[in-house]
Length: 144
Length: 393
Image (cartoon, rainbow over the protein chains, first blue to last red):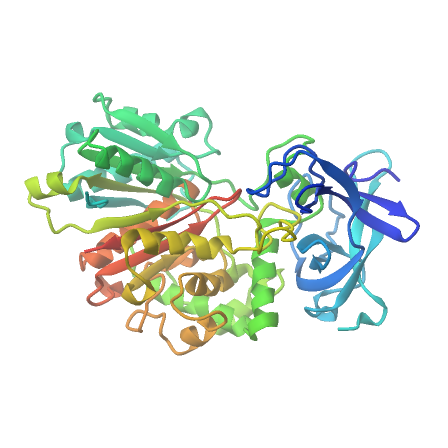
């Protein structure tokens, strides 16, 4: 299945991971990938390496979408609400957003929960009708 | 040299969903501000407009658009676009012109006509635009406000009732404000009965988009004295700092924060008033009244802490004790805030300053904060824009 946007994520041996970059001078990570000029104001580097970001992290905050978002979002009719997670990646020291897998709502989530990335789909207006994306899912058992 | 300028006059076109041309609102506000100042239009040497991105070319060149509508009289013009801080940047441009001696009097004006519904990104397939990208995966503006709100609940134990309490307070404040769009008192039950938008935020927790216009006539202190307005409220600080890398909080429209591996994470919201306090040479203990950007009810609580009016996590307690109501220790949003106005982007930061000017002149009627001498505003928008203005008398 084609990705919703090229170059944001990829499957690997360990599962789906977001594709970022890392400054070879100061170590700062970027998502989406940055390969031009480091944004750390104290770093003049223009060297980057591609990295797969951590596949798991701790839930920082979460919400859901109860109203249909505007285009370019492609929504089912009738609209099906979905949860959204903001997850802290420890190694990268950054927070990344994403939809939460179907069937997991706000009531199932708590800050600090261990979350992992899994493949998911988004509706699309193209011929295939859907595209691949990343989604967050509580790690089995939803341990806090 | 004093870094202060005088606010000689203020004006606002009432907020609403009027559906007319934005120029009308701006001109109405400008004329009211000129009359309030008692300054002839031909004496204005600099016109500084806040741009709107939704009203075509006239909106991109708002300063000139308003100058023409008021009658070209040879003033110099400027247009500033800085998302929600556009009005403050237009004000900063006017202050620079005045303090450098290139103009005595300036008109600062912003106005907007807004579409219905969610604010949406520009059209087309543009995956390189972070604003397009986040909408494509279903992340709207309320998503960010709700993430901040939920974080307060998880970190500090705030409740949805606390957020509703902000709405009830602001609705009471704005109830008699003739320029507010929503003038209706609401109960906690009303808020709880409104539809969920992005859990924990309901429809009545999230501000609407509105049409409106706001204007200021500002001048050098010398000019103010010459026309017998030496005691007019003064702008003591205008902070429009950018964030400092690395961002601590996930900011609209990003999908991720900066990575704080190499340098520590910093709060952008807290940096805005910090610079304003430094510039004015005062601290949070000197503030009598605050107008903050309550895009959501919960965000008002974040701002109160960013302004250091209390410690982190203590704003809900302040609210429950009634400290942020008119008559309390530190009234917040006596105008009714965005809860009663809805957001008219290029006018909103100026509307905050208008309210402080009325408060400091003791002209706020039923919503007057008694004895207010020093006020502060705070606002934040997309792409690293924000502002904090201190007004004192």
